[in-house]
Length: 435
Ligand SMILES: *Cc1c(COP(=O)(O)O)cnc(C)c1O
Image 1 (cartoon, protein in one colour):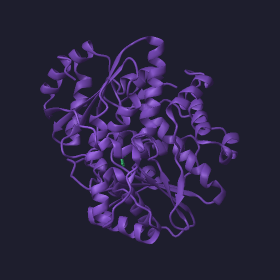
Image 2 (cartoon, helix red, strand yellow):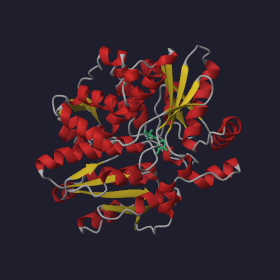
Image 3 (cartoon, helix red, strand yellow):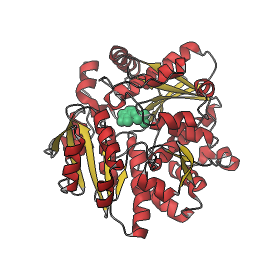
Image 4 (cartoon, protein in one colour):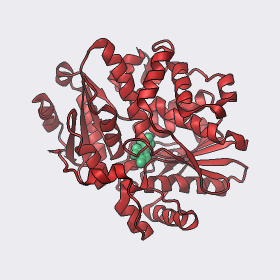
């Protein structure tokens, strides 16, 4: 699979290069030159395939010129000891649970695959790399888990101080070994900017083999398409068109849905569900894209003012707003509506949703009000509610159970390096090998 920059179709990269460089030198985003279709034969029988079989088939369809099917099977095997089940919530609506991985958030799907692909390439080239990643909460935990103790790879995670939950922070700051956490006095956008600047810095590039693990990396985007196919496989017997509501921040998840759609997955509609960081729903409404500074909400993993995958998302439609707004509906919700939805769903079904999942649920409800056609709704649950336990318990007025995996974390002491949102400070830390 050959990739090109969204800023220049002639700037090409191999899979290996796109995975390790993350960004093209012109600061665009990598896009596949050509998106192959999954075979009709496979789709016709997909309801009988396991999650891993689906993942292998998609990866082989995309990478067969670079990695053999046998190697791909071993990558998928290493990456996934968890799945993405759908759970029925109302007669026509299902939640796609993406929190059964090691960090209990959907980013495990991308991080585990990327780690497995990178370690496959590194084993051949015998290189060492340094991963830099900015996180608004869940990326860091997933990446830390994905790369933990992988030889030849060190990981530096930047997160905004006091803006991630206690459990999220513990996931970033308690692993040690090849994983270092930097606590930045600033916002997620600040963290993301520092990482972007680091990749453009010549001195750093001379000193390190830097690689990114943010949702801009194509090796994180691709595996997120697996569970859209898996949801289809699980719901195909119902015989109705599928509508996916995706709780969105940087729009990696939704872009992965579009990749699946372009590979031939039958999807009637995508819903871009956001909190008050609503640059994309407003773009879908007006045709004007106006990024703004991020604002804080209770669904904080989606507090992104200028989504990094926006360019990629619209590129799937040839940058034609008419086509984009036909296939994607956008809705946004405030914290009050989000809490109300968490209470309502818990009251009527006993199902506990994290705030991000509640935003996706609301998007689906809103879409249903406007579209009376017969369809199966799927809203994506991007994190386990226990990751936001204080907020969830306070909202529901009830205590919820914490999975063992998270409980044990809370007892370990955090280790982080504190820093201002200053590139100079960041670069100094890196150059002096303190992080
Ligand atoms: C990262 C994240 C999102 C947003 O996903 P994007 O791919 O950035 O749009 C939503 N919910 C949770 C829990 C997340 O961690």
